[in-house]
Amino acid sequence: MRTRSYAQAATMPCFQCSQTFEIEVWLIVDAVERPDLVEAIHADTVHTVRCPHCGTEHPLDAPLLFHDGTLETLIFAAQAQTEPEQNNEVAQQLGQQLIGTLPLEERAPYLTKARMVVGIDGLRQALEGTEDSDDVSVALRALMEASTPQEVAAAVRDHQLLAVPDVQVQLREYVVQLRDAGHPDVADALDQRLAALPPAPLHPTLRLIQALLDADGPEARQSVLTAHPVDVTPEVAPILEALAQQSERSGLHPVARDLLVMRDEVLHMIDHQG
Ligand SMILES: [Zn+2]
Image (cartoon, rainbow, N blue to C red; front, top):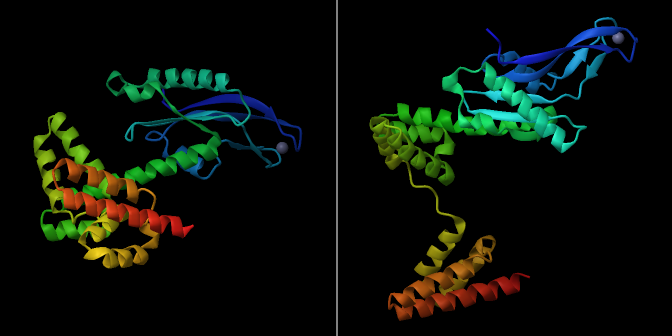
C-alpha cells in the first residue's frame, strides 16, 4: 500500500565537511499516519537534516503539505524563498498526490483547497490554532457525558470554553447540523445540555445599556456612565438611537425620548473622554 506521507530522496553536499550524503525531504505529512512527523513539525525539525559524516545540522527550505483527516485539515506550508505562482503549482501537485493515496470515501471537498501558510513556523502556528478548536471538541465530549444539571455545571467549571458565548453559538449550530445529518437523538441530547448551561455573560455594551435603562433619572445614569468609563464605547450611542427609533415606531414616545436623552448623555461623555 502506498503511504499517504511522502518524502523525496535527494543527495546533498555538506557545507561544513564537503562530503555528500543522502537525505529525505518530507513533502507530505499525514498526521494520523505519522504522529512522529507531527511532533517534528512542532519541534521545527521536520525540515532539518544532519550530515552523517560530521554531524552538522542543515535546515532545508522546502514546501510541506500537512493533512489531518480526523480534523479535516489541509494546510500547505510554502517555502520561504519562492514565487506565489510556483507555490500554487506545488500545492496542487502535492494535493493531487495525497488524494491519489486516499480511499474514495475519504475524498472530501476540503481536500481541494489547502490553507496557505509560509514555512514550518507558519504551519506550527496554524496547527496551534486548530488545537484550540480541538479543545471545543474536548469540552463538547465532557458536556455530552454530563447527565444531570450538577454534572453540566461541573463540565462548565472544568471546560470554561463552554461559558464563552461564541462557543455556545457554535454548539447550537452543531445541534442543527446533527439534526440535518440524521442524528436526532444526539441533537436532542446536546440541545438539552445546552439549555442547562448557565447563561453567557452579557456583552459589556449591552450590560451598560441595560444599566442605563434601569437607572432612575439623569443623575443615576450619569453615575452609571462614570462608573463604567471603559464600557462607554462609540457603539453605545448608535445602539441607543436604534432602540429609540424602534420605540418610536411602536408608539412608545416617552421611552423613545428618554433613549435619545441617554444617547446625548453618552455622546457628551465620549466627547469629554478626549
Ligand atoms: Zn558534514
